[in-house]
Image 1 (tube, rainbow, N blue to C red):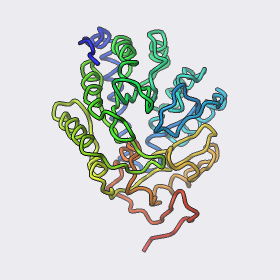
Image 2: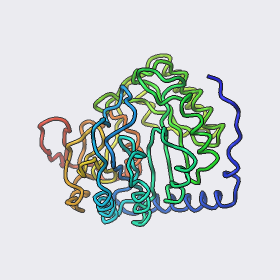
Image 3: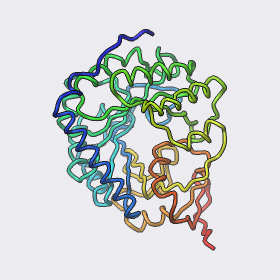
Amino acid sequence: MATPIAQPGLRKQAPRWKLKAAVRKARELTIVGHALASTRHPVMAQIVPMRYCNLSCAYCNEYDKVSEPVPIDEMLRRIDHLGRLGTSIITISGGEPLTHPGLDEVIRRIRKVGALAGMITNGYLLVPERIERLNNAGLDHLQISIDNVEPDEISKKSLKVLDKKLQWLAEYADFHVNINSVVGGGIKNPQDALVIGRRAIQLGFTSTIGIIHDGDGQLKPLGEVERRVWEEMRSWKKKNYSRFNQFQEAIANAQPNDWRCRAGSRYLYICENGLVHYCSQQRGFPGVPLAEYMQTDLDREFLTEKTCAPHCTISCVHQISHIDHWRAPQTSRISPGTTDGLVNIST
C-alpha cells in the first residue's frame, strides 16, 4: 500500500504542545527517580474497563464480544485504590477502552490521583472530536498496535484502515503517540512492520516493534524473514527511530531471559473483575481483589520469582522490572498456571 507523505500536524509545532511535552517529560523523570529511590510502590498498573472489543484478532486472548463496561463508579474506586498504593503510571487497556462510555472520567481520575495516564487502543474509534476529548481529559500517552498493511483473517488492525486515524492524531493530539508494529503470531507479511514503522516516524510519532506471544504469553521464536525485519528495525534506534529492549534479543534467538520479574509488585494487571494479576497472560495469580491489595502483597511479590519469567514476552513487565534488576534477589518461587504453591528458596 502506498501512503502519501504527510507533514506532522501544525499542532506539533505549537508552543502549547511543546510545553505539554516538556511537562510530561519532567513528570516521567520524577517517576524514574521515585522508582529508583523506593521499591515499595507499583511503577505501572494496567487496568481493564472493558473486556469487549470491536475487533477479533486471531492471536488475541484478551477480549470477548459480550461483556458490559465496568460501571463508572467502580472504575473510579479502582483508580483510587491504585492511588492508595502509590501507583506512578496507570495504563488503560482492554478489550477496547474507547468503547467505555466513561473513559474520559477514568482518565481524569488517573490524573487526579497523581499518576501518568496511558491508553492502549486499536484506534478504530478515533476521530478529531474524540482526540480533543482525550486531550481535555489529560491523557499522557497512547499506543496503537498495527499488525499489517492490508487487513486479513488474522488481524484487521491494518495501516490501510488506520492511516487516516494516524493523520488525525498527528494533527490534533496533545499527548505522546507510539505506534507498535509486530512480527510473529501468524502475521503473514513480516515486511509490513517496516512500512508501518516508517509511516509512524513520518508522522512524528515514536515507533516500536513487538514479538507476538502465544496464548500463554510465552516465547514464539522468529522465522528467518521475521528475524531480518526485526534486525533492520532494531538498527533504526541509532537514528532515534525506535526503542528496543535487550530482552527481545533473547526472544528473537529463541533463548530464555535471566531476569527478576517484579509482577504483582512493581507491575499490576487489574482485570475487568477488579482482581490483581501478574499480567494479562497469568490471570489468577495472585488473583486478589484490588480493594484488598495491601503493602504486604506488594512486598511479597517483589521478592517472589515467577517460573514463567525465562520465556516471557510481555514487554511492559520486562521494562518495569528492569528498574530493579540490580537489587533484591528473590527468595521465594511460584509457578503460575500450575497447582504449585509458594516455595521458599532463601538460603
